[in-house]
Image (cartoon, rainbow, N blue to C red):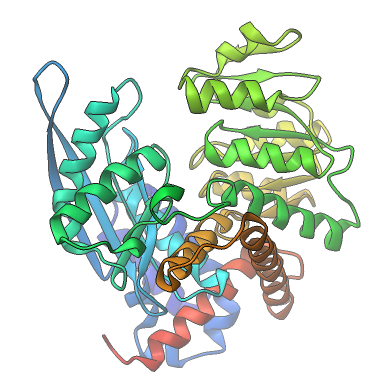
Length: 447
C-alpha cells in the first residue's frame, strides 16, 4: 500500500476515531486510489489527501420548535460543506433519528466524488437533523423546518451552497424551508434549494431522477459488461421511499419484475410483481407502513425484519434504503440464490465485507456514488433552469439524465481499465471522481 495513503489514513483514524461511517468511506476511497496517487508525487507535496479528508466547514446548531401539544422540542442540525473545488457546495438534507456528525461527514465526502462524476460544476456537502418526520403533523414538520432554516439560511445561497432533499426530506419539507429562506433574505433565490415544487421553480423528472438514473446506469452495465438487459429479470429493491419507488417503476418499464420492497420494519414479497400504484398511494399519500400492502394486494406476503429481504431469490439486487444495510451474510444469500448483479441506489448500503464478497464472486457491482448520482445530476439541471428562468420538458430532462448516467458509467469503466482493474467500478468511480477534484485543488493553491 502507498505510504502516503497509509499515513493519511492513520491520521484520519486517530483524529476521527468516534466517527465510524466517515472512517469507512474514507478508507474505501483512499485505498482505491493507490495507483493514481503513486503516479502523482505532487499530491503529497501539496498535502492534497489531508485537505481532501477534512471538511472546509462544519456547522452544528440547535433547532428548537414547538409540537402540537405546546411542548418545546430540541433537535440538532448539521451542515458539512466538504469541498468546493469544482463548484458551490451541493448535497441533500436528511431528517432521520440516526443523523449525527459521522453520518453527515460520510455523506458529504461521498457527495464530493458523486458530484464530480456528473460532469457538472458542483462541490460536495450534506446536512440534516436527528428530527424524525414520521408520525408528525404537517404543522409540526413546518415549525421544525422553519426553525431549521432560520440558522441554515446564513450559510447557503445559489452561488455558495445549494441543499436538496434526502431521506425524510421531500417536496413538503423543501417547500417549508424555501418559504422561510425567501422571507429571511427578502428575495426569490430560486436556485438556493433543489427538489422544489413545480409551482415555484422545481424541475420535471426530479422526483424520478435518482431511481431512473440508477436503472440507466444498471442498463449500461448489464449491456456492456454482460450483454444482458432487464428484460425478464427478477429484481429485489430494498426501501420504499422516493429512490426505491422510481427505480421499481423504471425497472418495470425496462422489462424487469420487482418482487420485493421494504421499509424499516419489514418487507413485502409479491410474486406477481409489486403493484406500484398501490405502493405509491400507501407511501406518498397515506404515509403508512409497507405492511399495509399485504393487506390490500392478494397473493403478497409481509415479513418482519427488513434485512431478510436479501433472502428473496432474484437476478438483480438494488439496495436503496440506507448505509450498511447489506452485510457479508446478506451478500452470501444473494449469491447462493443466483443473483448476477448488485447496483447501489443508497449511499454506501454495502459493508466493506459485503462488497468484497460480491466483487470476489464475479457479480456486477456499482457503488452508490456512481449509480445513484442521477438525483444530484438532475438537481444540477434544476439549478441551470432556475438560472435561465425557464423550464425544460420531462423528456428533455430525462434525456439529459440518461446521457449523464451513460457518461458516468463510461468514465468509471475507463478509469478502472486505466488502473489495471477493468470492470471494477468501485475503483473506477473513486478514481474518476477524485481526479477532477484533485486537479482543481492543485490549480487553486493551498487554500
